[in-house]
Image 1 (cartoon, rainbow, N blue to C red):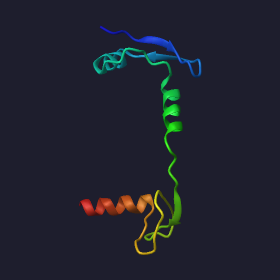
Image 2: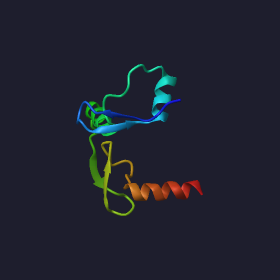
Image 3: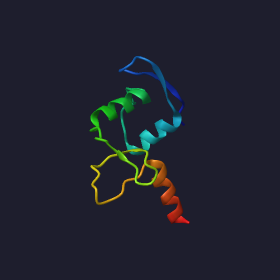
Image 4: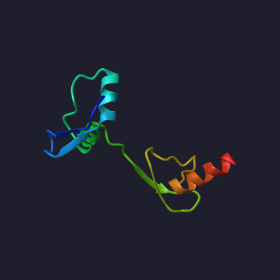
Length: 94
């Protein structure tokens, strides 16, 4: 059986717990090495490698509020803010 282990992050130097469940997961996947970074540093490293999405600001076709979208809006199709889009999606599901 696995037991929780306290490891030191090589990035920030903070202690973090490598849980028994995580150890079991690593073993199932065949990973040989323990993690060297805490969750926060792993996430930061992952996000730094990921390309940042360009967001475009436009006006919501429903409420007239500001809408930020990950695509270049065109005049031939309406664009909705996230609240109006979610409400419309909810109504369509009913």
